[in-house]
Image (cartoon, rainbow over all chains, first blue to last red; front, side, top):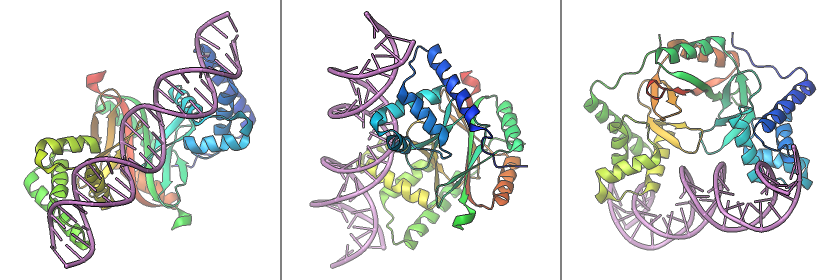
Length: 156
Length: 156
DNA sequence: GTACTTGCAAATCATTTGCATATGA
DNA sequence: TCATATGCAAATGATTTGCAAGTAC
């Protein structure tokens, strides 16, 4: 059965763990824990949306205007987070990527072509066939992404 | 069983049909059949690769330097072809899209993260589950795309 | 002849980079 | 202290657009 992924049960605990992992990651690489990096992680965490770097930047400016976080820092931090598999990015038809926390259970995306909204889902059957296919073709699978485009209930 | 898609059996016939469909499409929309548009379609057809607009432009310049086809025309024609579902585009992590003729049987993509090469495959099982999922979630499916990223045999 | 196309160059948009200054460990 | 980060502005790279000249129908 395919199913829509549920939200976190206990966000507080999850976030603290996420934050600690992040701090550890930074320490391991001789990188510094800065307010900007924390705010970016936190904003990403508290948003249920898949965010573009620009949207994320906007949210941060609203939340903490005094920080004057530059868009360049957002890009740099997202790149860092993606490299470390803390976030995942989705590429869209047009230009631009959208980012989401990657700590969640793996899932695929159903994208409404009208309103742009994204629904997540997981399907065990598909996952297992993906493994079979790569094996058959001699690939070492690194990652995969699947998007289904359609028109959602509300937009029909 | 997943399988790698095979090439066309009889390219000549296929191309003539493709070209006629294209001409018809243009006529229907009060658009003109130009040499540039033909060369773009033909080059796209005769390449087995997934091409970036720039790569396509290069190929055309080599084949018909006297045409002096501009990159803007390539972009404009690709947009037109994509809108009409004659070609399909793949978005990559980095920037840029790659285009391929969409007339072929539907298929998904296995992308080597080392050399960038793309292998196509089809899996009936996955296709049918995609339909089930959209139905279950009340979506009207328009399209879907699946990419598996990995390291190919040669690059391992 | 007229509307649609083209090539070119300039404009735009997302993303990246250089650099002087600021800050965490 | 001093290496790493940051903000800013300028640079880049892909794609788009305005416009005068060209071409299909």
